[in-house]
Image (cartoon, rainbow, N blue to C red; front, side, top):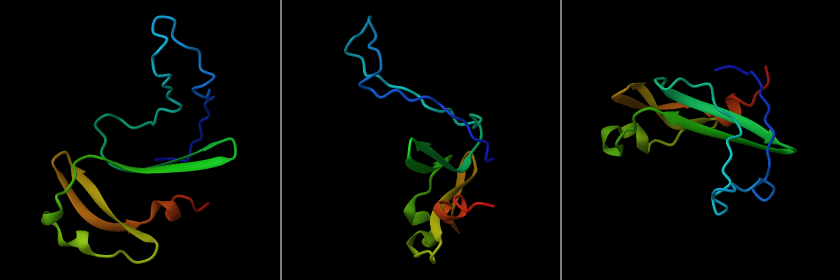
Length: 109
């Protein structure tokens, strides 16, 4: 979507204050909200760093595809590519071989 950076302060679960109303509650925290509209479908790649540890996530929002519906799902993608289920609209997805986001999205312009 864009390369805009955002930062958040992370407090580990061990250091997060307990809820006095429910001391046994799981100390869940949201570090970042992705700027994706609720009606937007597609393939997304998010990357982050916590201190010196880098991480990333590739995910799809939209419909899936049954394996028997598309023979491309049995192909082995060439190096630098991955097989993806690409949402086309709210009720339709297609299998495609796309650039590997771990390579394409990590390359600096």
